[in-house]
Image (cartoon, rainbow, N blue to C red; front, top):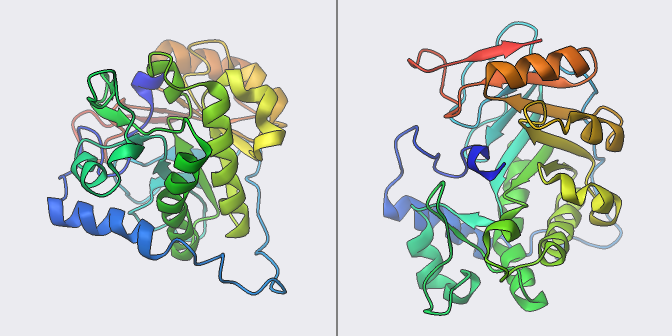
Length: 286
């Protein structure tokens, strides 16, 4: 379901893209803040992790923040946005792929962390023109976690209660260069980092990893189009209904609502997750 994976850092297709200096500054933060929790005295307890409530009324705002509709109790927003006051806030982080706008930073500062083909060219997710990050070795996963982990720390500092690391399924687009085990190992590093910061961690899509959820440390799920692909039941069972569902089609939304409307946090959004007032803006809950 990667082609509908939601808009990551510096948004896909919507919102004005930041300049190269902004990209470098934002990504570079991952290097300067990497040890913020490593330097914390061992005696200091980690902040309490708060799980989302099953059946919460949910809005997916990663294409741009706006005032939530009446009755909404949980939102997901890009890590560069501010949390919604008084709601349960999930922080969106594109953890396994690089935005087109950010690829130059990665190739300049961490070139070997970009997955390459036999010709040494970046392996690209063609649906979103994003380069895959290389999770194939323990050393590379550790170094990736230094950068992405600092983004997660930033989510906690901003006031989010949870994080959803996107493109967990990048191994499916790697041409065999990455494995499910590679991405699971990297996801565990991110989950540990998030828990240390007091954040719950959401499994983003990738039903094939449901059996690995406890080992990795996932606490809930963010499932795109589980109604469309008949996967909502598997996610609901695995996470005791702590699942946020995003559907992009009328048929998928109808199927999700008819089967799980009272139990899961289900929303229909337009595929570009536009802000309210945009021509394509769609927002419906069950």
